[in-house]
Length: 263
Image (cartoon, rainbow, N blue to C red; front, side, top):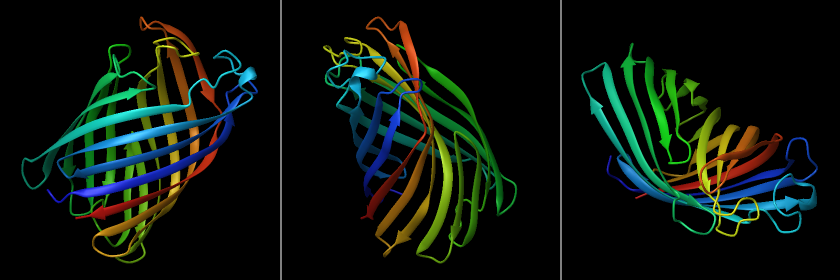
């Protein structure tokens, strides 16, 4: 449970237009994470590849609206077994997501649920998750059904929100999988941002994936996926936290690769 793991993840989403406009953007994302079952820290960098900036509905029409975005995140997970059937898990996180300056970029998150084991294969989970930022706070219920979720042979299923997942182990080393996940974050824009000086962007993403996991040995794993961005929405706020505009980015395809090493 305390055994540390290092993960490196790189992904790319292809160029997609801002809905209703000719301006478009592609995104690369790189994350390094050190964690175990009870906590971890991570750093993520996003790079934005803009096209037709003069035809975007935000920015100054000349400069790239955002070139890079950063996130520093710390997480702690608190598991608790009530009895053979009931299990509680709470995850707390603190993060800073920003373009240049870190001031006023901090947010906190909580994800908590109770799991009831119907039998050795079936379980249900119910709980909630919330992300707090002084500009915007999101709180939603979390509910799911799982089938053989911890097994390493044959079929695995998790159906629910904010995550759905189906996996199938061909053998101990190879697993094919597909799923969908919802995520939300709030980003502090630069003091001299051409979008909104010292403002904020709230991003909401629905991402689907299909791919495989391959364990080379007991310590080293490779994950690869084809990604499909189902829906990407973002809201722009000014420095006082007042909503200015909202936009959507059209669906796009992408790829990702993740390397994990367990010490």
